[in-house]
Length: 148
Image (cartoon, rainbow, N blue to C red; front, top):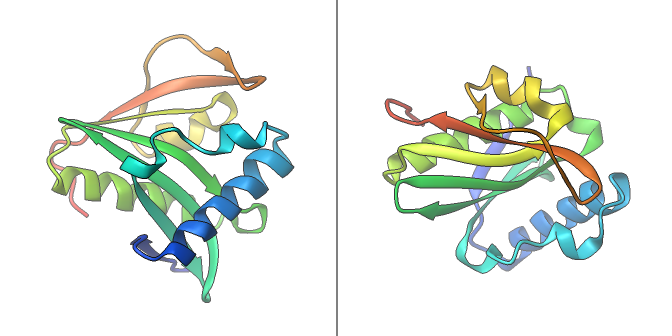
């Protein structure tokens, strides 16, 4: 399995890479309005980038709200899916959130991705709902005892 380099973005060019990946996945691939690819909380969130051979391939953001870690806008470029980058990125973020004192992680995901998130210890939190023209589910995970 390929190893990916994952880090918290600090440079503007890395943040731009995050937005480029979101635009590719959410807007071009999933045909979601381009404005919805940006999160109103982006400026308050930590942004994570996964690299493969120096190329940005996946992203997600994290907003800490007291003891809750809200993970958002997770996107993996199509050519890098099913290679472990999503798993490594999600594990990195939950470890980071745990280190920052979060006791629980929450996220909203496409309903079609539920099996992936279940495999990473998340459970469904409520009924599926329609958002941006697609079925979504809310998920949560207990972070007590998680290490990065």
